[in-house]
Length: 400
Ligand code: GAF
Image (cartoon, rainbow, N blue to C red; front, top):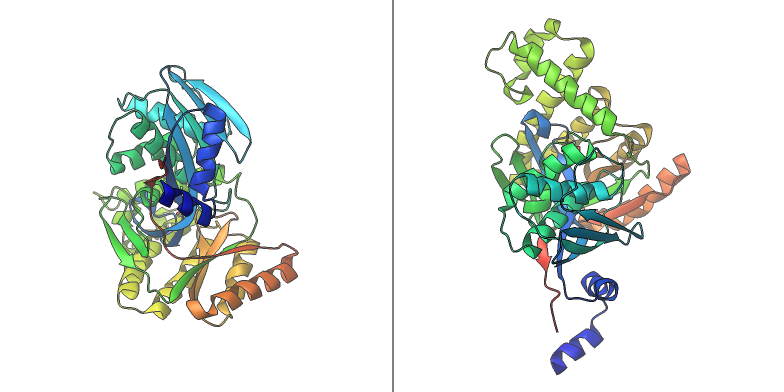
C-alpha cells in the first residue's frame, strides 16, 4: 500500500490513470481499460482488398476504452475527444451509417451480436490519441479497442483474428467504407519493434524487426482525408472490375493477387486505360512488398527506401490517391540527410507520409521538414518520430 502510494506520487499521471478517474466520476463504478494502436503502413498500399501483401507497423498512439458491464441491455459511451455521450439499446443497433463517431461503437456491438456473441450492456469512456483523418487508422484502433472492451466486460473470449474480421465487417456495414483487413489486423497483432508482413489472403504473417537505429518518421500534411471513403470504394470497384475482365483471359484468377505483370501487359487491350493503371499499381505494389521484406531482413535500408519511393510514384500516377501536399512532403524528404525512403501512407487523398530515417538524423529531419513544408504551403505539419509499437492489450489499471 505504502509502496503504491509512493509510486503514484513519483509517477506522472498516465493516460490510464486519468481515464480511470474520468470513468469513476462519470459512472461511479470500477472498470477495465483496453487500448489499441494506430498504424503506419511501410509499404503495400491498396493491396489488402486485392488479397495481396502489406507491411504495417503499430505506432504509439492509442485509442483507450474504459469499460464496465451493465445489468441492462444499454450501451452508454462517452468520447472525450468529442465531449459527447451516446446511448444505444443492444436490441436496436441496426441502421445505415450516420457519419458519426458512434457508428464504430454501434457497428462493433451489432457485428459481434450478429456473429452470435452475446455481449452485455456496458458503460464506456473513450479517449482517442490517434490523429483523426490522417490515414493513421484511428478507425480501426477504435473498433479493436471497443471490441476487446465489449467482449472482456461481457466475460466472453473471442479469438483475436475473429475480432479483427468482425471489426472490418463493422466498418463495411456501419461506416460504409469497404476497407481491407490491414488496419484491424495490425491493431490486433502489432508487436513492438517490428513491422508485420501480412498475406491478406491466407492471413499468415511474419514479424520483421525494424533495426534499432532507424525511425519511422510520419509527416502529417494536415490535409484531412475525411471525405475520401467514396473514392476509396471506387478504387476497390476498379480493381474488382479489372480482375473480372482479366479472368476472361486467365481462368482461375480470383483477385489481382493472382495476376503477374507479364499477364497484365499481355491482356492490357482487354482493359479500359484507367482500370489497367489501377491493376498495374496493385500488381507492382505486391511485388514491392515482397522485395521490401527481403531488403529489411537483410539490413538493406537503401533498397527498402528505393521501393518506398517507387510505391509513392505508383500511388500518385497509376492509382491516383496522392495529392499535391503529399507529393511535396516526399520530394522534400528525399533531399534530407539520413532519409532512405518516403511515401504516402494509408488510403491517401491527404493524411501522412512515412519516412525511413536514420535515428541520429531524425531531429534535424523533423525541424527541417516542418520549416520547408510550412514555407511552401503555409501549413504547419505535425511530425511524429515513431518506433513500432505493441498491438491491442488490456491496460493494467486495476490497482487499489
Ligand atoms: C485504408 C483501409 F482501411 C485499408 O484496408 C487499406 O486498404 C488502406 O486504406 C490502403 O492501403 O487504411
